[in-house]
Amino acid sequence: MTFGGDSANGSKSGEDPRLRLICEPAAGTGRMLLHASNFSYRLYGMDIDPLAVTICLCNGAFYAPWLAFPLPEPVLANAGKTAEERTAKAA
Image (tube, rainbow, N blue to C red; front, side):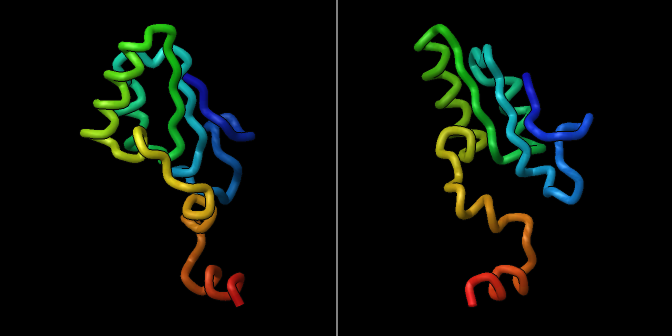
């Protein structure tokens, strides 16, 4: 499992840790991705077995919907901002 980011803990300074990119190159049934879903909304996984990918998507849909149905980038871009910052940017 790899964590995206610049620093040793995988996140940029001042960045919301829930926006870290997490990639699981051998996802299997998605058990590690489900655990990682407690810490991040941006989860990606892959596997060589199509059945394992289907099972992973089913587990994601049941237990961590943002795993099976990723959040759109505009939503993630505003996730770490306060209401004042979002309205100031819109104006």
